[in-house]
Each structure stands twice: as structure tokens, then as C-alpha cells.
Length: 142
Image (cartoon, rainbow, N blue to C red; front, side, top):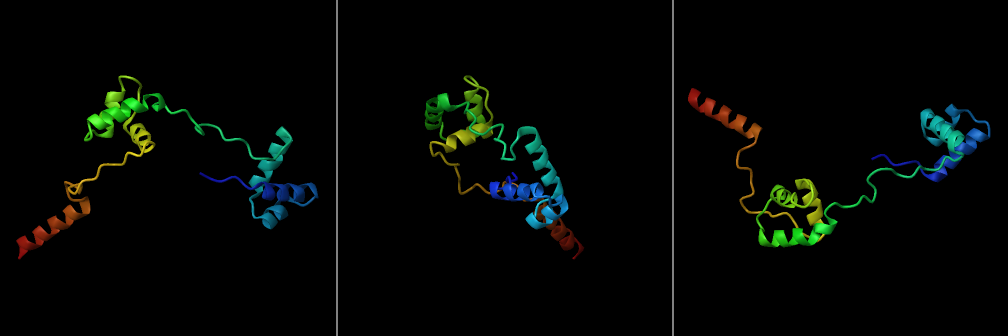
């Protein structure tokens, strides 16, 4: 996600514009684009301020599973080998959730992913399969 310009930079840009400098010269001096200067001017004209706008959307969103945290912990303790999708299917009795949401929720109390020694790929990767085919073809020619 892109970061907004600092208030110092915004103030510097707008002071240069208010003092009669051109957008092009101000852009070169401050290291911002002319389009950004035009946006700041438009924002100042519409709202009376060129400060950063408050963030919209998911910032501080409520967690769906917050009230079901104890049930989730209990189910994980009873079924330690359950996958995230299996846990999500179990939680669908209470609330509609996805496997990834279960994974994020399990990180909060400190659950970690289960890793096993046999956790390697069960099938070789594509490039490895192609290399094996080429080796077999070379052996057949010899």
C-alpha cells in the first residue's frame, strides 16, 4: 500500500504554490509529480485543508470469530489434526467463515501451523518432472 506524503512535504508544496511558484518548478523542487500538486490544490479548494484523509475500510474491523474463540480453542484441542478448512466447516454451524479466516484467528491465541517431517511435496515439481523425463529419454538413446 502506498504511503501518503508527510505533512511537512504537503505544507512545503502548498507554500511554494501560494507564493506564486509554478506547479512545474514546485514539483521539481519538492520531488513530487504535478498531478499530485493538482490533487492537493483541488483538495484544499474542496475541503479547505490539504491534510491526509482518514483511512476508510477495514481498519480496526470487527472480528467475526471473536465471540466464538473459546469454542474454536476447544475444537482444536479435541481435534489437533484438523485442517483450517475442516475447522471452518465446523464453525459454519455458528458463523460463515473461510479457512484463511480460521488461520488468522488461530494466530491470536498463539496456535502455530503443524509441520511434519514428511511435509515435503508428494509429487515432484514441474521442472523436476521434465528433467526426469529428459534423463529417461537420454538413457533410452544410449
